[in-house]
Amino acid sequence: MRNVARFAMGAIAVALMAQPLEAAPDRKPPFWGSIAAGRARMRTGPARTYPASWLYQRADLPIRVLKVFKEWRQVEDPDGTQGWMQGNLISERRTAIVRGSVPAEMLERPSAGARLLWRAAPGVVGRVSQCGDGWCRLDVKGQSGFVETSHLWGVEPGENLP
Image (tube, rainbow, N blue to C red):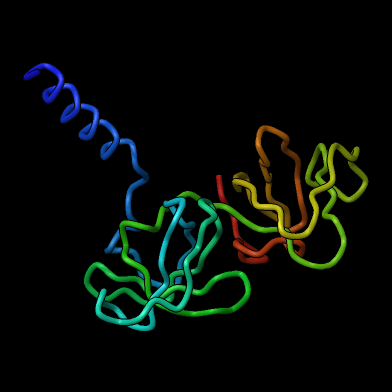
């Protein structure tokens, strides 16, 4: 029985270490991040005593961190809703959501004349990398291509990412 308890404690420790890191407290807002947890509450103020205004059930949803107060982050979601989340619910993983009313073209290269690889419907969330000159590489569950930043919420228009 002791081995079972020791294994369970080890599994809990491994699970805690595998969770995404909270947004760095020394970064100056505003900055981009994403929701780290599968369930995250947004509150009306920076404490658990404040009422929850939203329950997000979509890990990797991009958010913009507006303010930092102790372990709390004031955030904005893609719809413009603002509230407070605990810092450990926020990941530094960069993601973006396709915005607008038409699918975004995911191209082979960051160029308007490049070959079309995929289309991402409005509301699709993907991981972002290699941003520059108005384009970002968006990876949606293993399907990736370059998307104009004007079709994405979660990156700045002129932002450069390695």
